[in-house]
Image (cartoon, rainbow, N blue to C red; front, side, top):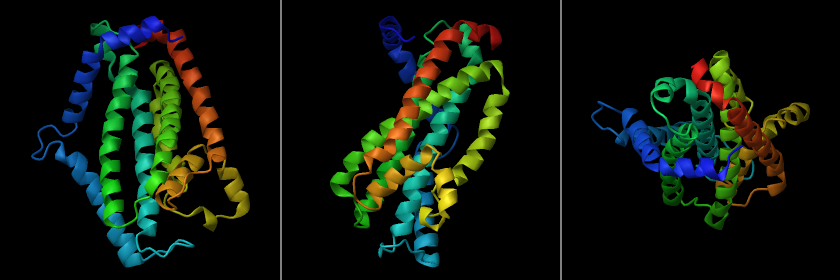
Length: 266
């Protein structure tokens, strides 16, 4: 399992991690005129489209919310959360296969690779969430002290995404269909999560079945924070938190058990 020595080795390669995070951020918009500005422009355009189309033209209403931005906040908080989850999970699943040449040529702690994915995804998420918070402040919908509840929810989300990602990423080295299958699963998973629609519109028996989805309480917690301006129901988060711990253990164990065979299979 992960030992103090492994963590010390990772710390010794902190320069390697930092350099690769910067490379990932720059390579995404390499040879474009606006460069890293696209990191801001794309989510800003998304927020504006959701606000104009859904709040301005369609004028959808959420029960108990009179603000014209209610559905925009509901939609953006869910979409941004899902986007981070999808990016982090997909990145961890493909991290070993996509860096096969690097693993074969350079000797470094393999644990550095998931850390690079985590930091890159967190930076991207911080940028778009920063823009979303600016939108909430300007529109007069900042959640106040309830924003503090965002950080425990984010921690659970990162733990669940990384644990599941490393577990599947290790298996993906031996069975390459895992990454392709995940891309299909994520498309269905998105619509099984209350992001675009409101949970109150679902029949009770469907809601009970879909409650098994661990992303449901996480997204609902984000809705509670940003739309209701309240702290989430922490009991609802016990389920995804337990799954996060289970997948983190399973992911680290799979990585530790099969790590020696990764190079041979890549």
